[in-house]
Amino acid sequence: MLTRLKNARILVLLILTAILTFSFGMGAFAKEPDPQTPSYRTVTEIHDWGAAITKVIVYLGTPVPKNSVTKDTFKVHVARSDDRMAEPLLEQGYRNVTNAYVSDEKGNPAVTGKYAVLEMEIGPTVSLSSALNYYGGSNKWVDSDYTITQVEDIDTNSKAITGLVIDSFAGGTKELVDDFTTGEGTFNGVKLTYADYSPAKDKAKNPLIIWLHGGGEGGTDATIPLSANKAVNFATEDIQSYFDGAYVLAPQTPTRWMDGFTGRADGTSIYEEALMALIQDYVSKNPDIDPNRIYIGGASNGGYMTMLMIRDYPGYFAAAFPVCEGLNDTLITDEDIEKMKQTPIWFVTAENDTTLPPLANTVPTYNRLIQAGADNVQLTLFKDVHDTTGLYKNADGTPFQYNGHWSWIYVYNNEVKATINGSTTTIMEWMAGQSLKK
Image (cartoon, rainbow, N blue to C red; front, side, top):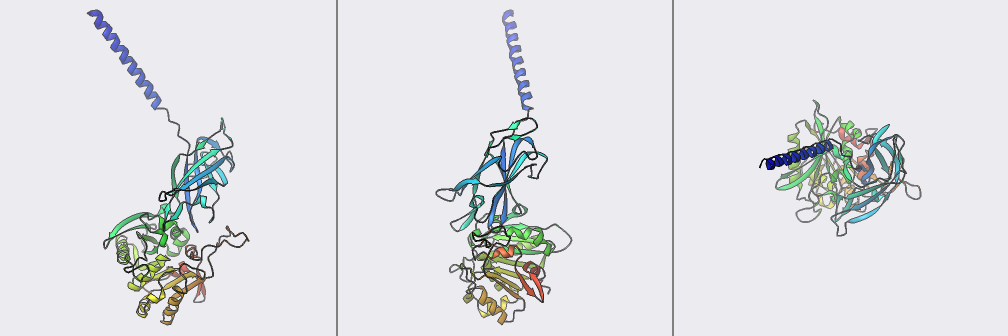
C-alpha cells in the first residue's frame, strides 16, 4: 500500500514537472516577437480624371539601407475587379514602376528603413492605376489586388534579401479624401449621405462651399462624389486660402439630382426639399458657418440641381457656380429668371460638350439673365477640355483631350478666369468676395 502511494506521488511530481517545463517553454516562446509577414499598403490620389493608385508602400520585414531598392527591384502586378459585374475581373497586368526608395512606415524617404515605396505610372489612359470603375450608371471603388515580386536582391548590412513575393494587403490611404468625414441623415423622409470638410477652428466665421455631384456619383458611399472627379480639391491649401478656411459639404443622392416628379430633368427634383433641409441642418450644427457666405455649385446633374436651388431659394446663397448644367432653358420661365438673378452666378461649360450642349442650357439662360438686368453673372465658355499640366499629351504632341463634358476640371483647378472691373479674377477669388451683406 505504501509502495503504491509512493509511486503515485512520484507520478504526480513527474506530471507537474512536465507541465511547469512546458508552461515555461511556452512563456519563453511567447516573449519572442513573431516576424511580421511582408505586406503592402496602397496610396490613392485624386487627379483630373479621377482616383488613381499612385504608389505602394511595401513592408520588407528587415531594415535596409538607402539606395538598396531601385525601380527594377520588384515587379508589380495588379488585378482589378468590380463585384457588381457578372464577370468581376476588369483587367490585370503589370504596373510600370517609375521610382523606388527606402522609406519609413509613412512612406517618407529614409536613410535606413523597413519599408520601400514603389511609385507607378499614372495617367488618364492608364486604366490599371484606376481605383474606381464606372458601371451601370455609377462609380464604385474597385478591388485592386497587388502581387509584388522581388526580381533583384536587396543588399543589407548583414545579409541579402531575396525571393520576396508580397500579396498581403495591409490597408490604404486616400490623400485629401481622408481629410473629410462622412455622415447620413433622413430629411423630409428622404435619406441622404454626405461628405464634409471642416477648417481649423478659429474665432472667425467661415464660409460654406456646397458641391453637388454629377450623375455617376450617386449612391450611399459619400467618398465617391469627392473622388470620381477631384472635388477633394476644395479642401486643398490653395483653394482654402481664398476663403481663409471654408467648410465643404458634398451631399450625395441615392440616384440622381435630376430625378423629377414626372421624369428625368423635368425642371423638378424629388430630392430638392431634402437637400435644403440637409443644408440647413448642417449650418445649424456648425454655428461658426457664416450664413451670409454660403456658396453652391455642381457639375452636370449637380449643375441642374444648383439651378433649381437658386430658383426656389432666392436670397439664401451668396453665389452659385453651375458647371455644364443640365436645366434646359425651355423649362425656365421669365419669373424664374427674376428669382435667379438675385444670386451672383458664374456659369462654366465647353463648346464641344455633347452630353449637355451649352446652346440648349447654359448660353440662352445666361443671355436671358443679362437681358433681365442681372448685374453679377459671368459665363466662361471653353472651346474644349484639355490637360493643362503639360504631363499628358496626344500622339501628335498636343495636350491630352478630355471629354468636352468635363469642364469641371477647370473649376477644381481654379483655372476659370474673367476680367471683372478691369482685373483678371479667378472663379474662387470671385466667389470668396461674394456675401449676402453686399
